[in-house]
Image (cartoon, rainbow, N blue to C red; front, side, top):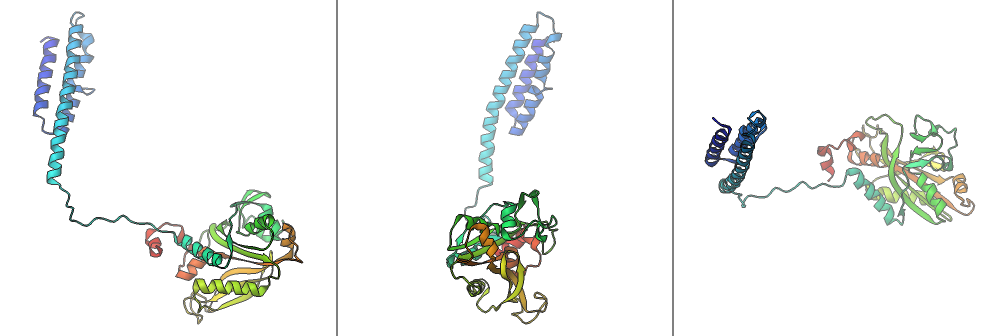
Length: 343
């Protein structure tokens, strides 16, 4: 059998199979069998070099013509069968428009975002403005300007994450915002500053190397400790309810004097005694105090003319106390079963 006869027979055989193909998948198989890398037409083209010299041109032309004809027929048949298959699919799998639709899941603000916005909103209603600062902070703003010289324990590498030792740190609290604002503005100043802070802590149920704080401070003429107490009582009663009792305990912070820690009557036992409050009836929620005169001098304020107070709280701690959450890691694990409880 000559090469031309062989090509003709292959073409005739392929056209017959294309004509009787019942699906697009059958056509895909035929395309591979005749035009693929190991297909019959492809094999003829590869073997042209083994033919006598005088037969090669005609055999090459015939093989290429057969390839083009088969590609054309497969494309036309594929188009026809695709339309038939689509029509059959529509007829057999018709959409029942009377069935109720499936509503997409709607996300919501994270519980920490909700608490932050609620706290900030309370202070805005009291006349405060919102300010933010950089998370990578200079040593001056994070420590020295806040009355923490180089030898202060809070500057230990065990507590602080240094970006460049002695120059820059990941801020350990939101208090640097206080210094930056007072450098830029003259009193009166009433600011609340939310943001992320970082400590060199090992993660456990009550500690995280990254968490959220809200700093607040007020500077004006004749500001005294009673103004601080009144402000915090107003805030606590709005956040936790008017039935909550509030107490202040003496404490020490390097940038406030006098300083105090603020407790509220236990949310779980209403101040009686339970495991949540350790049997004391009280829960600590924040620290506060009157801004130290040395801090005023560092920002160019006259401590003889102005006084002020500052307070700071952890957002995670507020959320844990308010909702009875016993593990801080739940806030960052993105478990939808936990998060959906607060949407």
